[in-house]
Each structure stands twice: as structure tokens, then as C-alpha cells.
Amino acid sequence: MKSSLRRIIPTGLLKRYRAYKKRQALKAYEGDRVFCPICRSKYDHFADFGLVVRHNARCLNCGSLERHRLLYSYLQNKKNIFNEGEKKRMLHFAPEEFFLKAFANNPSIEYVSGDLFPELYNLNGTYNVTKIDITNIPFSDESFDVVLCNHVLEHIPDDALAMLELYRVMRTGGWGVFQVPIDYSLVNTYEDFSITEPKAREKAFGQIDHVRLYGQDYKTRLAKAGFSVTEDDYVTQMSSAEQYRLGVMPHELIYYVEKQPTD
Ligand SMILES: [Zn+2]
Image 1 (cartoon, rainbow, N blue to C red):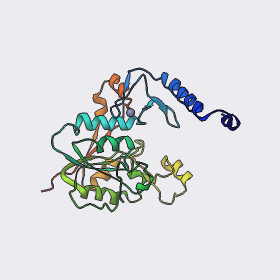
Image 2: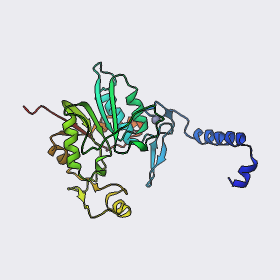
Image 3: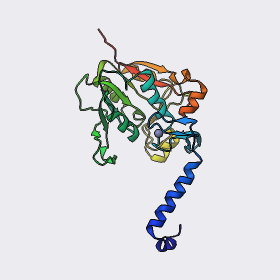
Image 4: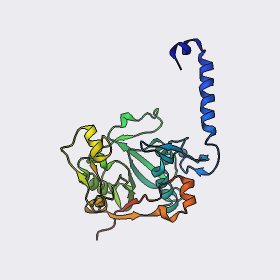
């Protein structure tokens, strides 16, 4: 709307007009064919998302994407973390706001979230994000039952050190999920630390702030830090109708890691 028009229209009327436009836009999504397990919203379909547009991708209420809903479903249905009586201590890196709220408010989780840049979170003082350098985690050994570190390691120059730190703070018998973007056509992870310009990084690694592109050896890299790693094809245990209903990608593997006793 032109600024000259904006000046003559009363603010209240403009607000009502915008709310009306938003309601009209949402009408196209009304229905119950899809379900977001994180915020429990139902729609006819999720919104399109991505530079290369993906259909049925983004939740209109909480903003979750396919990978978030897959992870939540995994934690809820396969790991049963929201129902067990025994309280789990969880460390969560770079928490998405919808996850942070869901985990922090869950009575079965003692929740610690961390990020190298906690000042970038706008949570109005309601939730706490601790400043944590993943290559020097400020917690003692064996501190957490569950560690979530998703879409973080591809940003970290010394990811081997980060993996050792993740292993150190995990309790023996504990587990985690460590998702990263993977190009399965690469046998070996592609790294070149001479590439530092954002545009060049985007071209080489897929995003301006990624420092590598993981390949098929991601599992081996985690195992070197001590983890037992499972590439879990949990998503294939759902019917295609269920995959559509949750709006998940049908081939995404869950990188499930465990710290087992070494005896
Ligand atoms: Zn949602």
C-alpha cells in the first residue's frame, strides 16, 4: 500500500484490513488432512517453502518444517520421551523456538538449551538460552541423558572437537540425535577451509555460513568420537498417507547416536 494512502487511512482500519487479509489467506489451508505434532494444528496442507519450492512443508502456525516434525514424531513415538515417568536431562543446541517451548514446558524433561549467540533469541525473558561454545561445553562429563544437536555441526570448523565434547557431556547409556544436511552422492565429506566468502560457501556447501558439505562418511565421523551410530529409517515405518499427514520427507534418515559402556 502506498505511504500516502497509509497516512489517510486510520490505523485501526488498517489493522482490521490486514487481519482480514490474513484470514482470507488462511482460508485456503482450512481442513484436517495434515497435522503438526509440535503445535497440534490441523490444515488441509502445509505451506510451500524453500528456494527450490517444496510443497506441504511449513506449518502455518508454528513455522516447523518437514525435518522438525519428523524429529518430534521420532522423539514422541520411537523414544517415548514425553511419556516416561523418569525425568530426562536434555541438552539442546540452537533450539528452534517451537521446540524450545515444547521441551521446556514438558514435565518429563529437565531442559537446558544453548547457543553460541544467545543474544539473537527474542524470548522476552520467558525462556533461557545459555551461551555455549560447542567445542568447549561448560558442563562436566556425563551430564545429560539426551543431547539434541541438529543442523549445527555443518557450521563448526572443528566438528571433530565438537563431537568429542558432545560425547563427553553425554551420560553413559544416554543418546542423542545429530542431524546435518548430507549429500549422499559424496563418499567423503567435502571441506575446503580456503573457501571463506559467504557467496563462495553457498556455492560450495549449500549455505553462506556452512563450512562443509557432509557425505556418506558422516556416520564414521561421529563414530570416531566414540558414538554408536544408527542411520534410522524411522520415516519408512510410516505409510505414505501418514508421511503426508505429518508433512515429512520420505527419505530422511535420523542420525541416532548412543554412548555405550566401554568396560
Ligand atoms: Zn505447527
